[in-house]
Image (cartoon, rainbow, N blue to C red; front, top):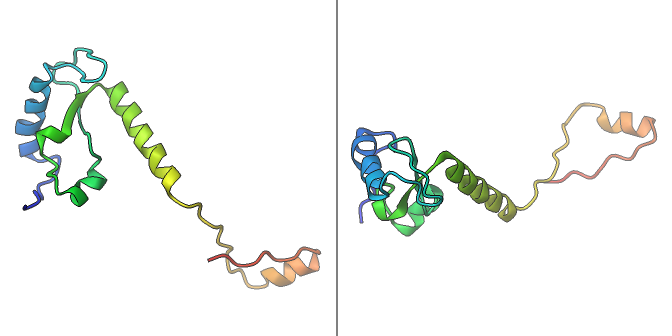
Length: 116
């Protein structure tokens, strides 16, 4: 299957995909059912970062939903938080300042071991 490489902000998205998804949802948020007219936001159900692995087009209407700003923000924040939990914590990299070890030794502190 060929993946569509057109950008999300293309004319195809703006004038074909987005209005189709809005009208399919009867111009209402698909989560809270608030009437939005054409002012809603089209959201990818499967996040765009995972679409490539599944072979889904970013323009596939079955992977799109019409949401109000509040519902879209809440969903995006949940996805962002879930992504943060998966990543291991980063170590603190010490700057390589000339004389740092001598300075710490002079004031009675032991330099922390380097982390990579």
